[in-house]
Image 1 (cartoon, rainbow, N blue to C red):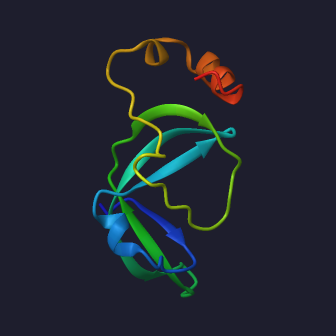
Image 2 (cartoon, rainbow, N blue to C red):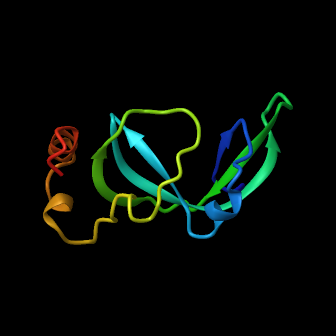
Image 3 (tube, one colour):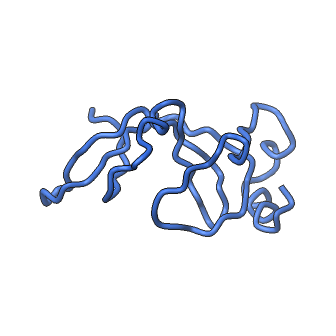
Length: 110
């Protein structure tokens, strides 16, 4: 089975930082909800042969504290102190229904 990859047009200038414990944070419905660890960054090509970059991702999704964020294009590097914290196995934010968590996060209450 091929590795899990996310394709992007440009090779990141700070690729070494991404593979040294970096993660891709997913914005879902205007809220950062999960992250995936970036295992490697490689030159690749699209199905039509167009050059691109592949981010090889850990298949495990790590839930994070929801944070409202507009969708964006391009690279955003989060300083570790600015990144959303991982949610543990226990905690009120994890135990509430996902729809409620999203609504509260959209209101910046989580």
